[in-house]
Image (cartoon, rainbow, N blue to C red; front, side, top):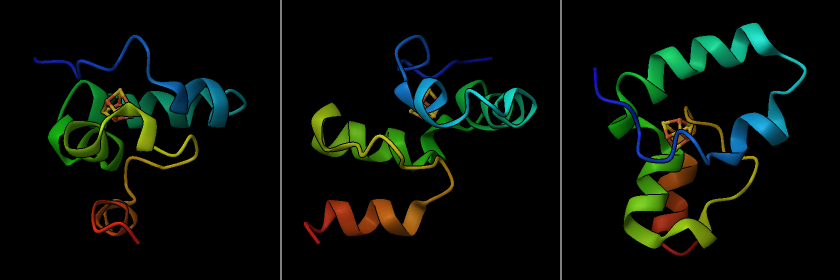
Length: 72
Ligand code: SF4
């Protein structure tokens, strides 16, 4: 299975999910080690670069990612 290229450095889990390890594992299995192309963080990273990925952007926040891509 392919893994997200950001997996080893993704700040989301360190900064937002350190107190929810079981939820973090579910998200990682679903996105980071699965359909990472659908991750909101990955989408912003790919199209706009790491600097524009908000630290608290959740992988499931696709609509927020679209707003970021539009410059909103
Ligand atoms: S949260 Fe998204 S960007 Fe971060 S490692 Fe997982 S799939 Fe990649």
